[in-house]
Image (tube, rainbow over all chains, first blue to last red; front, side, top):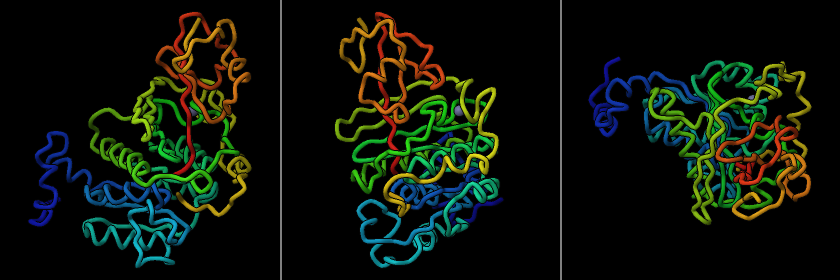
Length: 274
Length: 64
Ligand SMILES: [Zn+2]
């Protein structure tokens, strides 16, 4: 791969970094990242991945752009109200960086389709908006041995962690069962700039993973409270041997057998990405 | 005495599971960090809190 003149200008701030350079840029350009959810977390994550020159970005979302999204979902804009979020996100990526190939998945991830979708990618970002889907992504990635970044956010606060197969814990090691009664952003409200912090953390995790540089949030939980500005990194160095999906004697052996677990139980079933 | 989220607590001798059951925390929305490390979920029933422990409850939120 040879970078052309425009690319040489576009990525010049990467070339100055010893962690990236021309070699790292070529690595990013030949990498594939899947972003599940083009909402609050997915918006900044997709934009930063695209601007960094990640060569292929898959975008999964089944929703359309609504006025109530625009307070935080910065990849979408007023002109795109009513069109699919995937198309809207693709427009933004194309305008930002024509080097990026975008693949769109205009439907929800399910226990039946998620394994095929993630198999095409080097790294996955869970930018979904509820625990049921977050655990579906977790279990799918653990079973397929795919690295992924988890994040969740509500009000002013959120957390992020990165799963790397055989290197550290998964989401179930940390929180066990799916909290089916959890409040969603729709109920509780959320600040765009706070979601932006976590979405940026996810993009950064993907970039570091692809480059093989720095320290990932693997075995660590980044927790952020934007109201008090308390930022903590908690340590959980080892996977839980008793974990239902990544443990020594896992109970979850296939997504389809465990499908009831991923059913959305909360009062609102709209599935709007926050 | 031990410290839970910065506050003194006399929960020594209880398991993490017993302590959580006495609080308003929802077990499936938190992780428990003891002396700087998060406790794997399957060990809540067998892990006993000791005097001098520093415990932090780490909340998990599900939006996005
Ligand atoms: Zn696990």
